[in-house]
Length: 313
Image (cartoon, rainbow, N blue to C red; front, side, top):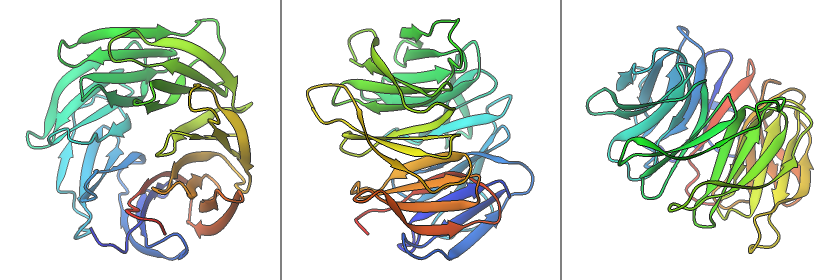
């Protein structure tokens, strides 16, 4: 991949844009896909490809050539794809989930889905753990299921109170080495779970992260910071002060977006947070002072970002 490209974004204008660094707000290159809205965007761990979901298809673009023609396209779902996960060391396979209530393991070489797991409602977010043996999936009904990929069945699960308003899990963040999982719900609540590869998932505690819809939660590389972004236009930064405890306290509010904040992610060195919003901007935040240092304009709202920063900027 070209070292010039650091940020990849997708927006309501059905374009994928490539940005050079954290300070230059000029888009270097763009690819248009006018056939369908882009519902998910991910980068492969080796930074060779960017994958995006359009309708029921997942397409891969070569980041070395930036050829607008996808190198492959896989249509394994029967409805819109809501999320893509490309794990480390998963041997040419990736995971997708969507509105057909399924989670699928897809083989890039075969060009199709090879395993499928069903939920009772839309699956919004997934993670993988336990040396690629545990597939963790969260859905619109407030269920978290951990699938045993060796046996092909549910190893354990958590079910939210059906009377809870806004019970859907929109996003999950896993700190496997520290043994915990965070699930962000539509009602603005973050739930903390104990995760152990040999035990059932156990609910530990919850806290109100926002008073409105949470769109994304993400942990920093060291797992000591949690960022949540929301329909309330704010990004909130939470800190795990005591590493012996699975608890987070509010550290800062990042205020500057004017509309829904859809996605965010930490830089590799955890010095910056990158976010995107319906307000037609991508912002780069300094976590030292909580202020944004760069503002990238976009013709329309931006809903997804992917990072390729291999070292500190």
